[in-house]
View 1 (cartoon, chains in turn red, blue):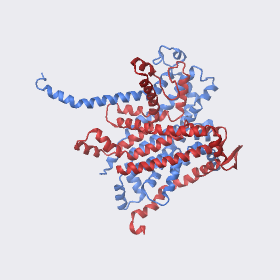
View 2: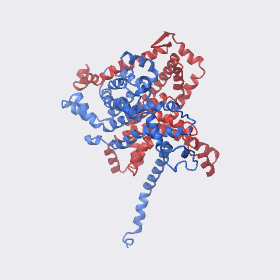
View 3: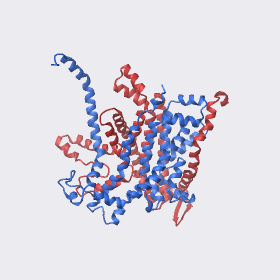
View 4: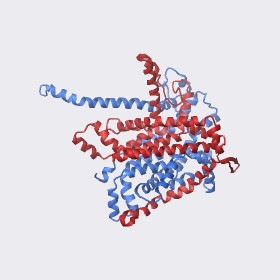
Length: 298
Length: 304
C-alpha cells in the first residue's frame, strides 16, 4: 500500500538506512548491550568479586529496597541533584548563548576571545581541574582558591564594602558572582555548539532583514533564535547529560562510592533508578520542546 | 582649514547615529574582558607558578611577577611523567581513535537523520541510552567483555569501539551530527538522488562537503574528550605505557614517590608546570584550527 502511495525514493530509503547503521548495530551488540544487560542484572543481584571472575547471586529487589528505604541519604541526594539540574540548565543555556552571540560578531580581538573561551573545555573536563584545585589549595601564598569551585580569587566582599552597598544587595552580588564563575566554567562546550549553530544560519536571511529595516534586536528574536532551534535542542540535551553524569553530582558520587566499596549491586540499583527517572524527565522535556517550539518555528 | 567646509551639524549627527553602536561594542568588550578574566585566571596562575623556584614561591611581595624565572620545574616534570613516551601513547591510541570517531559518527548519524525505517524509535532509544549511561556504570562487565574479546590491555580497547561508532562519547557525537543533518536543506540531496546518485555518493559528495562547521566542531570535541580520557585508560592499561591523561591522574602519587607531598612548597610549582604542559598542545591546535569555523553552507550554493 505504502509503495503505491510513495513510489521510488521513500521505499529505497528504508533499506539504505541500514547501510549507514550497520556498523553501529554491530558495535552496540558487541561493546554496549552485553555490558549494559549485565549491569542491569547487577542491580538485582549480590556481587562477589573473586580473582579473575565475578560471582553473582540473584536477590530480587533487595538492592532497591535497601537504597530506597534503608539508606538515609539516597532520597535526599536524589532531590538535591534534580533541583540542581532544574536550576543550572537554564542558566548555562543563557550564559553560553549570550557569549556565543557576542563571539560570533566581528570585532577586533575576536580570535583571542574565542581561544580564551576554549580553555574551560580543555581544563574543566579532565584531570587538570582536580590537580589545579589541589595545587592552588596547597599554595603557600593562599591567594588562590578559597572553596573548591568558585575561583573567587579577588575578595569581592572588600570591594562591595568599599562601595557601601546595602547588605542584601551585597549578598546577592556575591552569590551571583560565585555562580558566574561556576557557570562560565561549565559553558565551554555549549558555547562551541552555539557558535557552530550560528555559523550555519545563512547570511541571506540577515541581508534581507537588513534591507527590510529590522533592528539588531528584532534580528535576534526573529531570525537568530528560531534558526537556532535545533542547536538549542542539542545544547539542552547535552547540558542535562553532562549535569546528571558528572562525577561531582551528589547522587552519582554516592553510586560510585558503592562501587568503590565493591558493593556493585547497590551502586547499580541506585544509579539505574536515577537514570530511569531522569531519562523519563528528559523525554518529557524534549517532547514538549519539539511540540511547542520547533513546530512553531518551522 | 577643513572645519568650515564640513558643517559641525553633520559631524554631530554622525556621532549621534554611531553612539549607541560604539556604546554597545564597548559594553561587549567590557563584558568579554570580565568573563574572560575568570577563564584566563587558572592559566595565568599555572604560568606564573610553573616558573617559580622555592625562593620565588616564598617571596610574598612579588606574587604575580616573580623577580627570577626558572625552567627547572618543566625539566623535572618532563622526566617524571616521561612526557615524550606518554605523548606518543596519547597520539597513537587516543587521538587516532578520536579521528576515527569524527568520521564514523558522521556516517552513522546520516542514517539516523535522513531515512525512515521500521524500529527507528527503538534504535533512537538505544542511542539516547548510550549517551546517558556513563562508562563507570558498566565498567566491570565491560572489562570482562574486553578480556573475552582478547583485546584487554591493547590499544584496541580504544580503536575497535571507535570503528563501530560506540567509542568514547560517540553517542553524543552521533547526536550532534544527527541534529545538524536534520537542519541541512534536503533539496540538494533529493536532487542528487533523482539524478541517480546512490545513498553513499549522496553522503560523501553532497552531505559531507556541506558539513564543514559541524565536522570541525565534532573534531574539536572528540579530540578534547579523548585527550582527557583516563577512565578507560586506567582500567585497561598498565602504567608503563600510560597516555598523558593517565599520567596526570596519577601525578600526585608519582610526586609522593619522589618525596613531594601536597603540603610541600614545590608541589604547587611542579603541578602547575605539569598542567601547563598538558594544556598547551590542545590550546595551540585550537588556535590554529579555529579559522575553520567558517560558513560552508553558502559555498554549496543552496538557496532558501
